[in-house]
Amino acid sequence: MAPFAWSGRSDGDGPAHRRFWHTVEEAGSGSRGSAADGLAPRPALLSRGSSQSSSRLDQRGADAALVGFASDEGVRRNHGRVGAAEGPDALRAALASLAVHEDLVVVDHGDVAVTDGDLEGGQRRLGELVAAARESADLTVVLGGGHETAYGSHLGLGPRPRLGVLNLDAHFDLREAERPTSGTPFRQIAADRHEAGVDFDYAVVGISRTSNTSRLFDTADELGVRWLLDDDSQDPGRPVRFVEDFLAGVDAVYLTIDLDVLPAAVAPGVSAPAALGVPPFVIQAVCDAVVASGKLVHLDVTELNPRLDVDQRTARVAARLIHRIITRHASTPRQQEA
Image 1 (cartoon, rainbow, N blue to C red):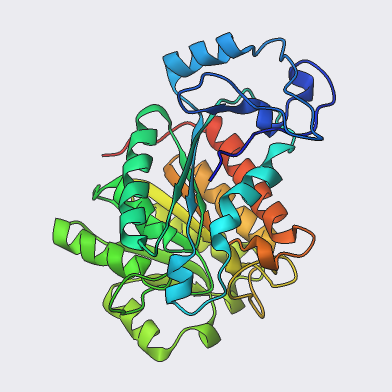
Image 2 (image 1 turned 180 degrees about the vertical axis):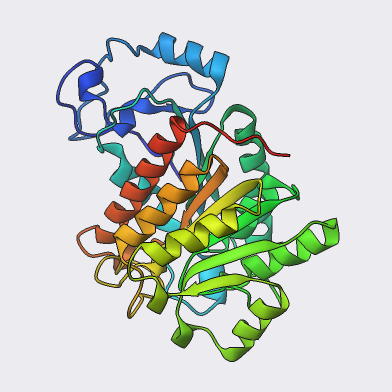
């Protein structure tokens, strides 16, 4: 798989014309953006030349580090509609031309690709790359991939105590299975954390009662999971209060967004489109609350299936959320972990 060539719209020179692709450096390259057919090459940013941004990267680290997880093996094992392996580059393409008003440095570490059905090996490699990316970035962002991405993300974070896992999703993804799928990651995380002797603090916003069996609700109860139904998440007030209460009990938070939490009209390009879903402005308000807490350490966005997307609707709304989280996080004071 060839590396994604960061490029996009260019309206002129200088920071007043900055777009997301101008902020991106490839890991180890010290250079940003590259030209692609039909797209303009990166203009000089008068206050942000490559030497300046590389110097800042050396001194302060990146504002965010991107990692792609090109996998739909978990979706295939879970009998879903495959195509999420193409999600990382579709998300990058949707991000590339979004205007950026902040002075950002984003490092792209490329993709971990799952091949020959080796999901378990891919998840281990994703964890290793996330851990490495965290050495020079305050925020790591994984672009999935099916929701099997989540277990690899957690491997990269390690069994840190008082870590909250907040999932925006129509599903619990707490299934029992003989081998990992896109429906098992949080059960795997729970098992790992139990083995490490640390609490499993897991909350979900957007749960669909008709998409989760009674057994899954029972499993959630047994594991002490907190959830909010999609029925109760149609305006921001209750979800934001729910999330703020959850955040108060943890020192750091890993936010994972499964795009099937959104209504099918907004996000048709997913494995399991939502009949009801949670409106995008509610999801945005929840994300804002997480960032404002100063506790966000990791984000992943999963289940984009470009093969099923319509007019890039799903990719575009996902890119808006990623852009908003990264830019707001860059200017938010961090809360120190205990």
